[in-house]
Length: 148
Image (cartoon, rainbow, N blue to C red; front, side, top):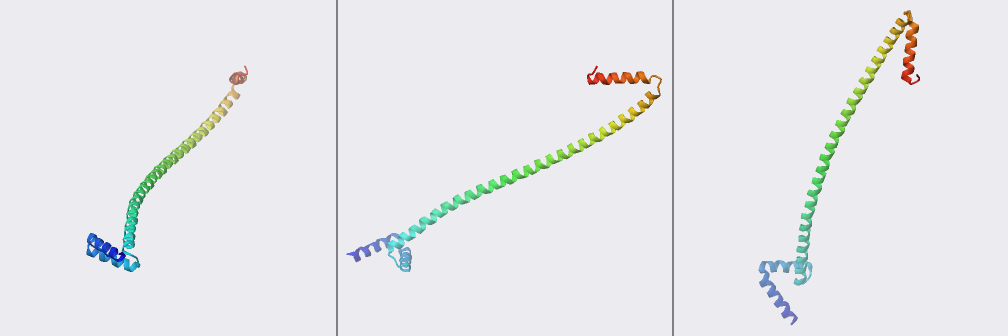
């Protein structure tokens, strides 16, 4: 009876999958040294694994595209940051140049003031009113200092 059931199963399988597919399955079972049922299970298991890999492959491709777009976005941000740093450096350089110009102008004004002061001191010292001018100047300095 077992032989009859086996032959019956072969006939059903042969009629369902066709002659070529049956022969392929039978050849596969012989190479693996297993029954037709086990060979069919193995083939179906392999097919299931391939489908899983295809699904995973699609997901991995999607993740790869997402990661690529993130990397590209980070590169754009890095470029923008580099441009901002360059602008800030230019502003700092311009500010340093303006500060140097201001200091140079102050040095010139201080020198001019010192020369003017020396000249005026020479004029005051030779003036007959030198004592009055000196007293008036000292009073003004004390007023500015809040000593008056």
